Length: 367
Ligand code: NAI
Ligand code: MG
Image (cartoon, rainbow, N blue to C red; front, side):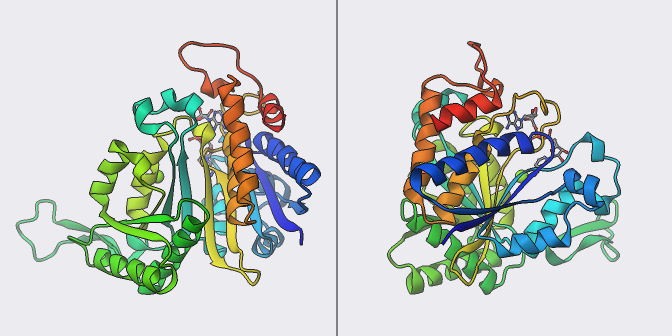
């Protein structure tokens, strides 16, 4: 069966980096006999320009039906003054919401040639390859009650107001993201560390119990450990290679994944994925995208680094198509060209050198 893909290049450097991914996909077709059924669509400003909306119902329906969506980036100064309801990012938000993508995957992978870009010492990060799975659709960013209120009967409160958010997780929400993490771990190092603060939070106690329940009943073959999230933050900086997959809630995941991103260096290198429930064919609903945005400051200049988008496709190979060997080959190709010194402008260190173009980087990786 062919793997069905919807490609949404989007705005700014999105189409530039996606053009390199399309070459990579073609290579796997020609040289590995993989068969892809590819559709292309518009999202963000590009869709607004043509259709007056950042995502059409047709494109939304297509996204729901394919094995994986690959997205470039959306947004740009041209659209900054649009009404909120048609802003480019609304297209991306609609995709995430209607596909119910509750597991956000942020790998932190350190290529040896770029270890000196890390915020940490080379010996701490060389060879690092971890994956943070952040719950994305619930928790304190969504829980009720919430709001800013008059703090009526509290005369001791200077200013007289109170701001409220509620951390709320159901067992079902925890179990489904735990399942995602265990499934992913089986395709990697078979190890999951769950992070919460069960020492001070009820939702943390439930989180720990439910993750343990999913482990004991469904994934006893995967090694599971638990860690308080504050200790997790410390361990990520102290000895990050002790981890394989980290699963955590929306708030802790937001913070821990940004910290982990800086273990590896440039924004132009960081892939991501968002997964939802398994579809009829067993594959999860999936959206793969680079972490970076549309980079209007360098758009149209052939300066963009395509690696984040290419590594996002490698994630699709591994996590949507069960092509872990192909994914590893692609990652090794990236590693090799970096080791050979190929650098886009964003990867130039203080020692300088001559950067290569977006297309040249894609071609080097293919070669
Ligand atoms: P950005 O990620 O687009 O750019 C930040 C800086 O990193 C810029 O200097 C840019 O040139 C550089 N950069 C980013 N990706 C790069 C790459 N692949 N190669 C080389 N350099 C790269 O974030 P910014 O500037 O805050 O936002 C620009 C636009 O992108 C805005 O309209 C924003 O709303 C949108 N955006 C979209 C996202 C998405 O589609 N998921 C995520 C973040 C921002
Ligand atoms: Mg963040």
